[in-house]
Image 1: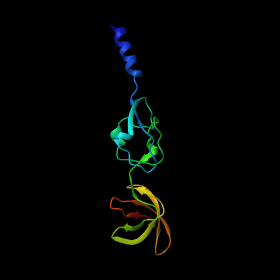
Image 2: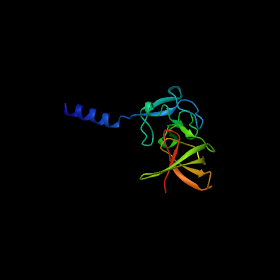
Image 3: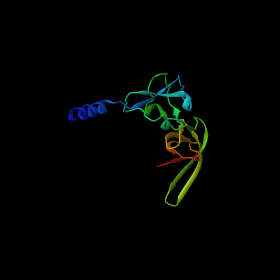
Image 4: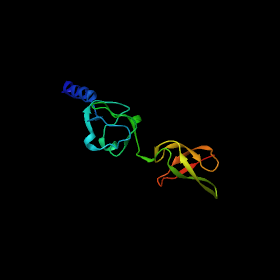
Length: 138
């Protein structure tokens, strides 16, 4: 009985989890859908085990069929495109300054991008907000 229990414990320790892989070639900037993904047996620290974590995300690089989808290869869908005119917001304490700017990078909600203040031609860094504005800091 002890041997049988030990055998099951060893087999359970060697079992592998599932890894999300691309079912077909996915181009960069494409939104990931359920039909573009599949699950294979295997463990990968930088990958995903649940396809629901990946669906709705955007491919940052090309993903090839049969290869794992890594965390570094996907992100939130881009809300701001490069060269798009956007609202820049600086807020500190009770002071709030709004200016017109131009996005120098492409990005999604919560990502930091470079932006240019159209009036002063100064390049700044800011965080993309859900409403499409960019909050800049000192």
